[in-house]
Length: 75
Image (spheres, helix red, strand yellow):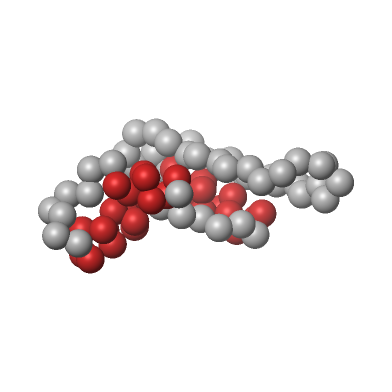
């Protein structure tokens, strides 16, 4: 199956405030690829909870971050 093209248009006059887009799904389905492309094309930040969890484990006494990664991302 060929990848689909993602088309994103930005409307400065839309009147909408900040938007959070959450991409979720099964492992190895292309979530990170889609999220990264969307972030690049809309010039917005791309943040992975996995990276937050890695930092929590590296910089704290925790062996597993549990829900901490999601709490940090939410904050």
